[in-house]
Length: 234
Image 1 (tube, helix red, strand yellow):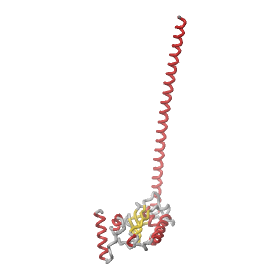
Image 2: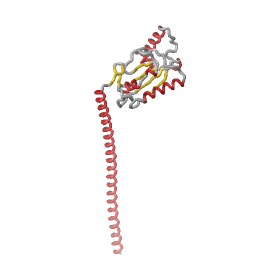
Image 3: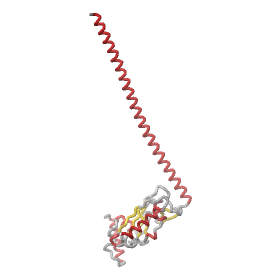
Image 4: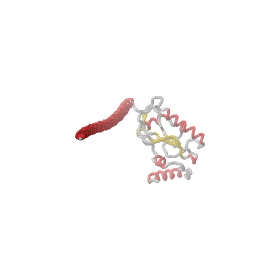
């Protein structure tokens, strides 16, 4: 365990203990990366906390996708690092809420390919961890809401910024396609040059073979004449 992760976990244990809550299993089944993020106690550019799936909206996923990506924790008390869990830990209940989260991600335009993990199940306080990668396209909700992460909050993207970001993305896509096309052309040219070299080598070999054949023919003719002259002299 790293020093920062250990300090975060110890600080949280002391805080929970002071509130009278049992701390024996507070981090049982919780990953170190989760402890490290929750140890900050303040939502940041790369993570956000929600108490329940019902508090989660598609625009929250959109905001992370339109920024540098990040993590949304569902089952954490707002503005704290207290894992309160969301609902019970029965497989049916967890699967239902997981499907709900995935459906909200898929309803975005384009769909947000989030990864949903469940931690802390053994304490009967399931924590849903939604990992959202940055998008190569500008995302919005089905209602047309564009948001981004800024100063630990989800803020609207102005029409002017939307235009700029779309143009930048299109320019990036065009440049990428142009680079791919250039590499493809270069590869084809290399293949053509290789084929031309093989053809030139084959032609040179054929010319050499032809010269050898002519030389052999002359030698055979000369030998025939010599044989004829020898026969006449006898």
